[in-house]
Image (cartoon, rainbow, N blue to C red; front, top):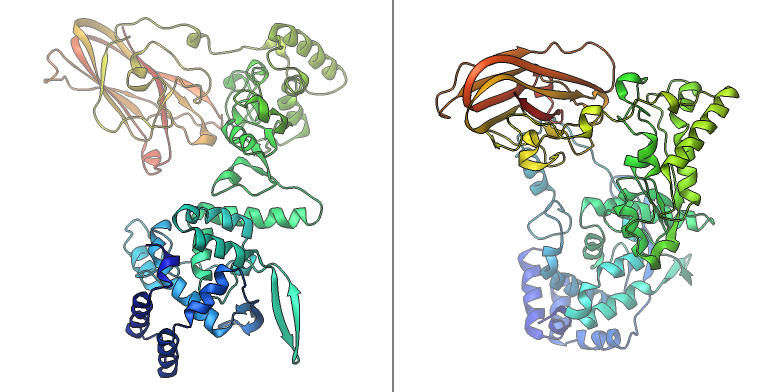
Length: 550
């Protein structure tokens, strides 16, 4: 039985009465008044009016806000109508499972004390302070269309309740009394602070942290639109619900843009893997310091902004945008170096039909245009001297361990950087200049694996290449340890190879750490150990591409 049906049942009203008495929510006079209301079934006439959409207008009042000198606006309904709303709020407790576990407001058996107990039980929290914040005018500023969207679950379960709430919330008028004079004012009332059901509605609207962001973006979007402007936000604004009318700048790949376009929102494509220019144009060891690794001209040019967007939604694609963040750009001259000729690629992508591009032709033009810029005093990157991709990464490497079985002895690689998965360290594929090329396997722990060659073999060398990228907290291991075994049980003492961490400020470096040995073994236990500083930072990585055995 749903909420609306229970509003008509005398036994439910009696249960409500007992609950209020038990919680000591009623004074003696209030208890007598509620008992009279229930015995005379005055709720029936109120419900009849609700079903006929004959709802009273609330009174708008300004009251003192507790603890401060500020006033807040609350709304009050006639007494009998308000009692029915209180009963409705009581029955709406059945939908408590809608809310996130970290929501403690206006919920049975939750509250501030329980929130504090939970915080104090978290061992990892070392601080002794907390921050109290408040959303200004939260209840009354709630965007009603979005709130109704979040109440859609009631349509099928309790259609009459949904219809009532929609009717109640859609009314933007209120009675205002000043100096004994009453007038009707028109204003946004949101969930109407002060009414019995407003806490439930507020929790529905903001049921998780992501939705706090959504609430804020919605509010800002409405503010901008009221002044003839439109909001554009990075694709994070999709989290928690996209504000009506907002455009999306898709930078975390293209999926955010695809999703937004399919919802009828305008989109600007700006994925970092193609459109971020705070990165080296060529092999990082040959370039000035940059922020985010290696992004050559060919990679930028390969981007197709319409990929993944259904034909009927392509009209929502406004264009694309390149970004050059300046943390590592100290001069205008260096800015020019990072911009050109990659900016030419962004321009051609923007005006070229999908599938019509020709990189060899474009590169020739880019060489010519960059040379023209340099002749005019601009510091454009010289493509004629381009090193290009790491040569070792262009073809598979054949060695004794290529394609054999490998076992991870402890924690495995990070889910975000699996490269080729469980066999990545022995698949013959070497990494490129950048850890995000899906060839480098990333570890938030020591690398600790055992390689099974399948048979006892003569071994003369074991080594691997590691990548360092200081701005991304990717570092070299401090040492490697290699042990050998013929039976997989009895291993030799480890051969240790130390690495002195380079003392420089380069953003991206490769270093091969190899061990020359004379051994007979079927099994090789390989370990790359993080330095003590890195170990104390749970978010710092080791990246390794291949364990080479010869």
